[in-house]
Image (tube, rainbow, N blue to C red; front, side, top):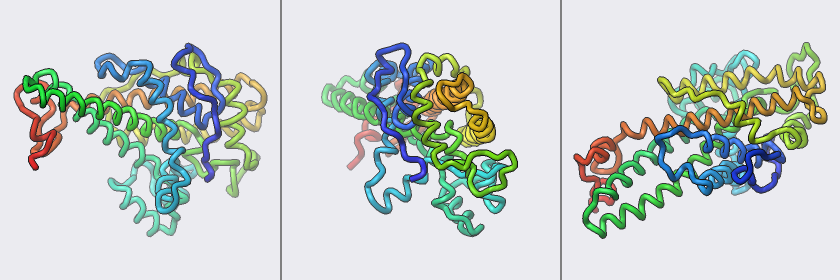
Length: 339
């Protein structure tokens, strides 16, 4: 695959305030996950703030790359979740594809539209849908956790209370796993090559500025150079402030990927100018800014999923999270099931 991850050192980010990462592949995803978790705002569940949870998310942020090689149809369907190939005008693949702002509601509709336009779905990728789907899944995780946590505290039947506690702990493990998976796709979305038809050298397209066509471009950027310059303390310092007002996951995903697409030409100009040789300060700043963008976006995706979860209704028969937290609804049947 054109976007295979590069092997990296084990995570040491949690135990040290600064860390040199070995690549944007494995360790880049670890770093984004760790920085995002360390930056979570107040008001989220305390278990998310523990060193163990932070380290777990750093490791679990690698999962979508580690799934590879399972066989078909698994690989072909999931490998294309890591990217979306946009042209210089921001359309999927070329002028026949839609703009990010015109993405259909469902991935199946997206696939059908691309096929009808004569484009290969597998070549196009579907990263926006992977990000949105993962965010929606996390919001459900949080909704169930809220109910379990509230019910466990109020339940006087010891057997039911024990069940709530056990299921809460299961949900916490699942939440960390699902944050990790979401973090992988959000991290992919901060890497210029994951949003562009120019994903490994400029390619067979008009090239008036004479950008490189080296097939090593992607790997050298993520690998040897990033391993020399990326540091957790620098990434954390570069993370923009939280932006949660009026959060809409589709609009936010479109804006985020559009911003990343805007860094493709600057990347190639910097590469042409030698900015990714040795420990060039210009290249280091570029890497730091992109990793910080990914970490900040993941932080906001997690926090917004938590906020939305308080408005949900879950289980069957459905129970409203807010009513359970207020102590006006009994969630037992919704959680355990009537059968």
